[in-house]
Each structure stands twice: as structure tokens, then as C-alpha cells.
Image (cartoon, rainbow, N blue to C red; front, side, top):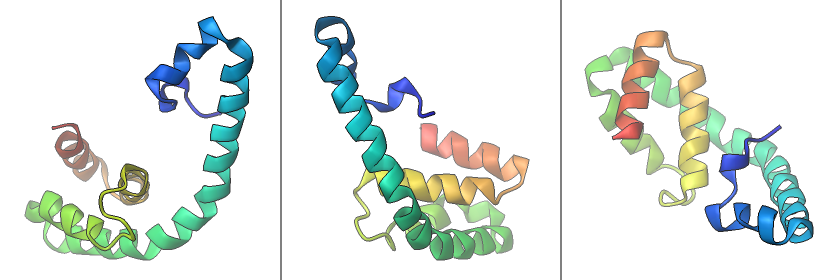
Length: 107
């Protein structure tokens, strides 16, 4: 089940003010996300694998390599695509690399 904090903050306030609107929006939000997951995975998998291979070859350039990979996305400014790439890359890395990537994503 997706986390509630994935919903925009203004929508979460609807939970108190208009519970029915909140439920309708949440259902549509989750349905849309679930419909797009296979599409994103199909797009991300080759990019993620290439990114991990490059990071394994040059671990000192982890963040630079990840940013270059983000430019290969259909829309490099779309945060959903960037986070999907992050998730795909993160899942393929070892713990030390995961920590480094998480640090760069946070700052």
C-alpha cells in the first residue's frame, strides 16, 4: 500500500475537511500510479542497469553518473521518472553505494 505522504500535502488536508473527496482522489492517484509502474519499469530497467554498470566501474563518480542517467529519461525534469530511476538503481547497488546515492539525493 502506498504511503500517505506520497499524496500532495494540500490533498491530505481534505481528509479532515472533505473525507469523500479525499477518498476519491486517493483512489484515482493510486490507480494512476499502479497503471504507470510497468511502463516506468520498462523504460527504467535498461537505463538503471547501464547506470549501475558505470557506477561499478567508476564508484568515485557515482553522483555524476546518476545525473547523466537522469538526462536519458523521456523528461529529465519529471520527478516521478527521476525517483523511478533512483529506485531501480538503488535496488541494484550494494549497501555502501546505496548510502552514497541516498546522501546525494537528500542534499
